[in-house]
Length: 176
Image (cartoon, rainbow, N blue to C red; front, side):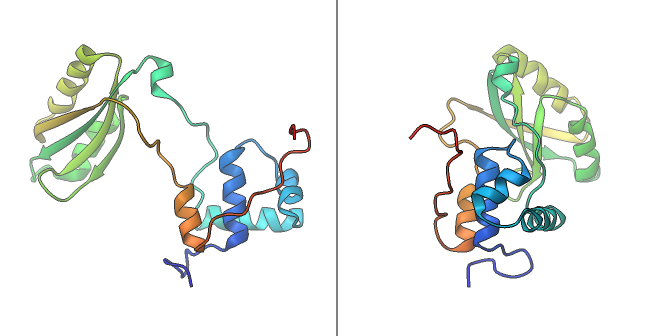
């Protein structure tokens, strides 16, 4: 049985479905069923179950911050005043558009944030806004110089089923 088997485990068909959706997010259910060689109803039922279980979180477009002019990315560890709590600090951070994500962490800090800015000077403005909240004591910033591995989840899908995904049938109009 694959690692993580249980209520959130997926099988090979689910993994192939996720693989195709990752490669071609705009693919339709009918085309998915053709490529996977299963009934359209099966594909729809699998998609519905994967969404209901939280395996598939959404189908929105991936946005590249640099293409919007936010060319600086930084990871920031925040130390918070415990009396304010994580929720109040997260509410403050949620109001800052340049804060892309924030996670409660263990270790030296309390929160880890991924932040973007238009330039190093703009990063200072964003950080000033972040630490301007009384619930935040200190920030430690690490500027990302280059992305070596982009955010990815497909290897987890492959690991969940215990085997690499088999190639799916290419689109009919693909050059061969």
